[in-house]
Amino acid sequence: MNTSSSSVSSLLDRRGFLRLGAGVVAAASAAFEWGCNLTTRSCKSVPPNPFVAAGKPLLVVVEGEDLRAMLRAGIEALGGLDPLARLGREGIFRGNYVAAQPFPVTTAPEFVLAVAAELKRAGLSKTSLFDAHGTRLGAAIPPEHILRRLGVLDKLTQGGVPVLARDFSDPDEFVFVQNPAWPIAKPVAVHRLLDAAPIVVSLPVVKRHVWVNFTCALKMHFGSVSMADRMLVHTKVRSGMMHQRLVHFADTVRPQLNVVDARAILAHNGPGLGGGAEVVPGVNKLILSGDMVAVDAYCARLMAQHDETFTLDMVAPQLRHAADLGLGKADLDAVKVVEISA
Amino acid sequence: MKKVVRPVFLAPIWAFLSPTKVSGDETQQYRRHSLLLWALAGLSFSALGWIAGGFLGSWAPRTACAVGATAIALGLLNRQPRIALVGAVSAAIVSLAAVQIGEFFFSPLLAWPVAALVIGLVGALAFRRRRTRIAFIIGAPLLGSAGFLAGMLATFLAAMQLNDSRVAAQTMLGGAVGFGVLLMTGAAIAGRWLDATRAAGEMS
Image (cartoon, rainbow over all chains, first blue to last red; front, side, top):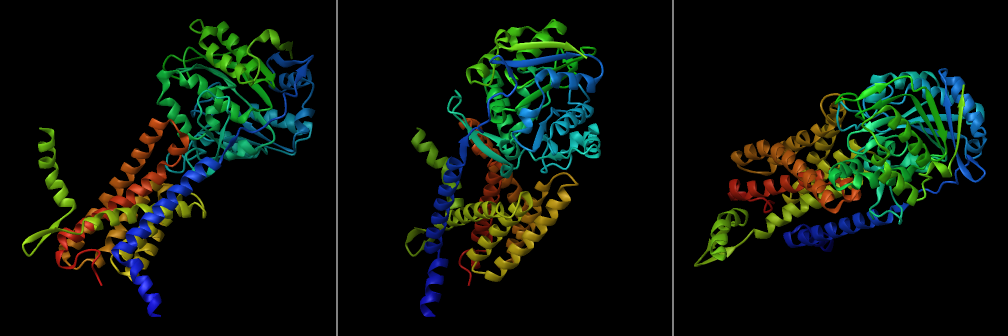
């Protein structure tokens, strides 16, 4: 008894407590360092692009006015979605929901539902929309606030596509991944759900971007990583690091299929309305491919046709970097482009 | 010149942080370590509370555990286990409620100043003099909030310098640490300077 109370009192005296505190700090620091290092893993491994023809990535461009007919014709030209169905029974959609402004600033809900219906026809039992553009740390900006204001949340839920709106600040939501080939040797925190998903289908829109000039299949993956990563990149805009980092963000997700809704595009400025940004209607195209670099290379040309202030040089650094990392083909001569009408 | 000016400039600050007492014909520096001890206890308890809360869930349990752990540190260093227990439980419950309310009004971050106020109210019982109690009740939410913001800012600036999202992802942990450090340092200073006859850390 005496021994016990003396050991307790020695623990609680100043010297004992100082030692204990120092030990606790050392243990916590070690645990933190250990946790940081050990939880950094390689980027997820994905099977090679299933949509190829004669060894070249296939890129299908469908022109038309009936969304569902265009989509169906595009999927048929792509060779069907069976290769996706072989990867798993559930798929996750990634849309672009950077602001509470309608298409073409954000992915249209009817477009998501149309692609979901095609995936269901192909044999997938469930598709969900993932988005992370908010945090529970602010009452005005919960993760679902943009989706709710756009009506996407209600429309998709009613249409049988659950919405997974996640907190972009919660460290528990992420896994740290890194590719040794990245010139910036720092890990990226990618959302756990996207890292684990066997099938990710990306649904980009085509827009100009105030800092990186262009946003489509690559840049949209800013929404796939933590707010910490996004903020760190935004603090170094002038260094040109953003062009590289957006490619790394896309590398952490590597969607198996990209279906671009280019029925209209956002020209002159972006990624939201205002600041001279202008919606160009009547483009009336859908672009489908398993190669997100080819998609961006094609859509950049599309932008150049409709925006006289845009040139292909503006997007060349990110496309070159993405091609160097093996994310796809930046040279459209190395891609089989199929253009059809529906 | 610098060597002379710097000590003259820093001397009052150092004297404030490390009060001395005159004992006989020699001046002894004492209680110097206590300030460090209290700050260190605030740092380690709040950090461990935050990390432990992560096993229970997200923002709400993390916040509750961090503020509860800080209250425990305060009570234990005051040799008041009951105050430690009451402070921890009440701070945790109130912070949980504040997080819930904050999700609808302004921000769950409101939980930090609210929890600091609760710690101030309960922790004040450990002081004997009324002025110390009042000062601690008023100062606790201010110190807690300032520490939380400073901790978050420091962590994010460090992350920017290191360009490392692993560090940036711990911004809230930095805030919790700042909360614990400043609150406990404030308690130590209040005890030393305002509760002189029954100084903090020397209670029985």
